[in-house]
Amino acid sequence: MFLEALHDMSNTTTVGELIAAFLEQCGVRTAFGVISIHNMPILDAIGRRGNIRYVGARGEAGALNMADGLARVSGGLGVAFTSTGTAAGNAAGALVEALTAGTALLHITGQIETEYLDQDLAYIHEAPDQLSMLSSISKAAFRVRSVETALPTIREAVRVAQAAPSGPVSVEIPIDIQAAQIEWPADLAAPHVTTLTHDSARVEQLADALVRAKRPLLWLGGGTRHARAAVERLVALGFGVVTSVQGRGVLPEDHPATLGAFNVHPAVESFYKTCDAMVVAGSRLRGNETLKYKLALPQPLYRVDADALADNRAYRNDLFVHGDAASVLDDLATRLEGRLSIDPKFASDLAAARETAVADVAKGLGPYRRLVESLQRAVGRDYNWVRDVTISNSTWGNRLLKVFQPRAGVHALGGGIGQGMQMAIGAALAESAAKTVCLVGDGGLMVNVGELVTAVQEKANVMIVLMNDQCYGVIRNIQDAQYGGRRMFVELHQPDFAQFCASFGMTHRRISSLDHADDIIREGLAVDGPVLVEVDMLSVGSFATAFAGPPVKKEEPKEPEYA
Image (cartoon, rainbow, N blue to C red; front, side, top):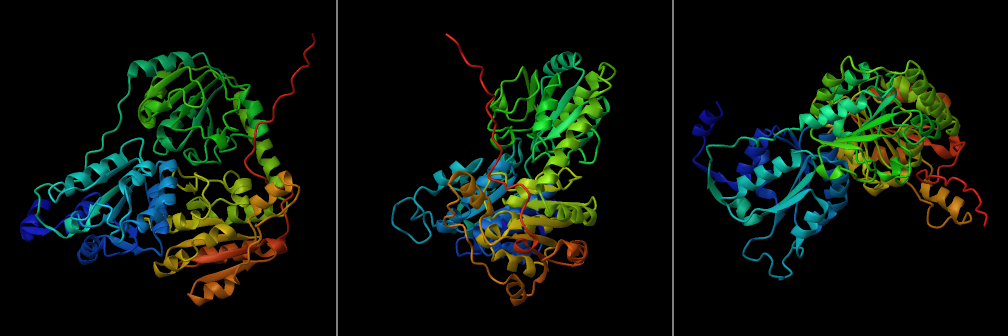
């Protein structure tokens, strides 16, 4: 049918339209960007063809973050367009975030005419050695060097972006090549992305080792978001589960066998000491989720990862299996059926550790425990939970509000402030997206506040929960704890958000007392389109425990040495 459609077309087209048609074959239904003279041939083709929804962001960073958010919740390919030079540089922080998260993302940037390229002519929109910059912040970066290689280059870029371990890929396309005429090819098909195979003998070796375990634990990272069925098989055999922040929801967080993302809590670390095996699957064991690699994980430690370089990274492992997490874990479950003898107290001990961790975190929230409870009651099980870097996320957003689907949790993993709101817009614009709830601080919101207008224009179904304390709260607390209370440069003058939202037609609600939280949150979730729910933290009050940065490992006291 596709070939018949090609016969109806003119024999030639522009490279820009060829790229637009190819992206359609890759299943792209929504793309993001900022239009420019150096990407206009492609975006003109997208507009004329009408098969891809184009979302015009207010800035390149916003466009890339939106594409990132859409890709994370959908499991598909995120696509974003920028101009070259300054515009490509504006996207750098968002590319770093996508690289940290392993997001399958295609970044297409224009480039100046090939006649003037790489000659240091200070040509408008040119950045010296831009390709090297993009290479350093992307999984890979390519330049289209001729009309004939445009489609092969884009096809390879999509394949690399989606191949495990996935990541963002940037492609430069000079403007004269975008506008050039080319014959329609016979093959516009999406690339074939292969699933990693694995060495079955190594899985058998892993199974033989795990047979001896009475209290085995799985640590699940973002690389297992497609592996729920295999994880459930292992849980049915008696495995317990703990996750990274990126692995939340692979097993629903109300399942009795999971510790959720309470991975560094003291009660959980104590529980680790009672476990006699851990399998880490699809996780980088990031520094701020392992107390800077000093978290005492169960031994022996085994690892499963699509990245061969994960072997012995950060933690030494007793056995490493290179392969797709879903395939390896499913194979492992088959080889372990009927062979495990689980300690009958294991499940109750795990539940007790989680109960202690949840209670301790909740106790530190002070009045904001009521806000968490109101949100949990209102959101149900089918929602996306997108968070920016803010005190509220570090204290409760990353762990306490339960997530039930493998791709429902999205967080700025690289620690960059001001990216969560844009990722939430992208998540909300994914096809068949559930209601998206976004947690931001006032400092982070203002980094790219203009993208709120994008949310209104695109009718993104997102409720943004704004925690407004009119300062950089984490930095203030660090200054209190480590700099003698000298609060330098943290106070933020903010707009009246009610008037601000009214100026461009965005619904706004304010919570000044948590007595009204239930009603306001329900009203916000019922809005068809974007809504900003502002929590006035100066009125509500302070957390019971001040958060002053990620937890660190306390050194054990050493016994005195005697001569």
